[in-house]
Length: 383
Figure 1 (cartoon, rainbow, N blue to C red):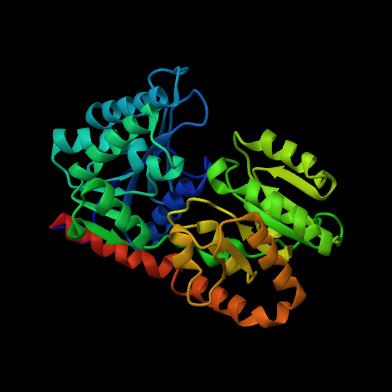
Figure 2 (cartoon, rainbow, N blue to C red):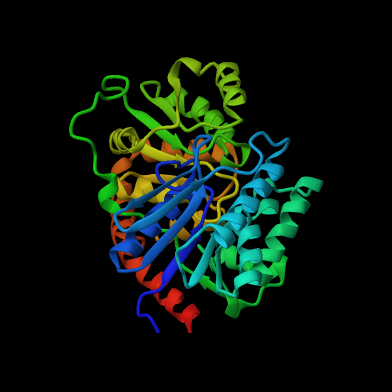
């Protein structure tokens, strides 16, 4: 048996085509695993209408175009992506592999079919569930739930990022605990070093920072309302919200309606250098998510040695527990505003929290250590 297995990774996002946390996680796992001697074949989506192949630092990367370029719905798009993945792996890929690793239902459809066809072990990382993310059941979410169920049933093992997600899969999908492996999301600390030369935002104005996809479940509407309260006591502060998404215009209108639009900036999606700049010069990172299986953005605040605030929900409650961050018990804008005001009234009393968060991000959640657990799981699946 080979000491180091070759992993076929199927993912809708891969560097540099990163939209959210899933893409960053996949890219970092592959990079760290590669440094540990694992072999990877990454099959992902193309960012344009052309397919391509590259061999990057020993990693095979295929970027494919879905069979139908302009589908009617998102589910149709994902189905087309998976059909192309299946077609490519079965009939065009000339490289051999030992394990199929998929991420969420987005590529799970292909993973299930490929396991059936070629009999390779199937590993799934479940980053989130549709019913949890939407917090309501619809025909649309029920259909995705059926894809998730098929993936969970077919997988030989499933990685989840938190005890919160473990409980969700046990309760909602009747998944057995012995099929689940908890491996927290991690970061590569050196990727978050501040840039040496970059213009500071707003000259020297202090600012709070929020980052993430602009969708309702990320809770930026709560942050805007909290900032409107906070700003009355601390008028010198500004708020930066970095990210893009379908909720953007509603958030802009909300800021206008709250009369704080002059003090709030929406940057859109930011690349790594500007992200690091914003992190290292902010006074606080606020993660107002209403649903978060883990919360990798909170880790980014911790590794930048910034006070990181979130509601006490989901994986964030685990990540920021034990004095590593500031948790808000009540999921309300007023409670969030009170917590922010309390911090800036006496910031020195939170020094230990910031230090603990920084230490945890560099040790417990350092991907160079966490990757060892993934390597062991790969080798276990080979047996």
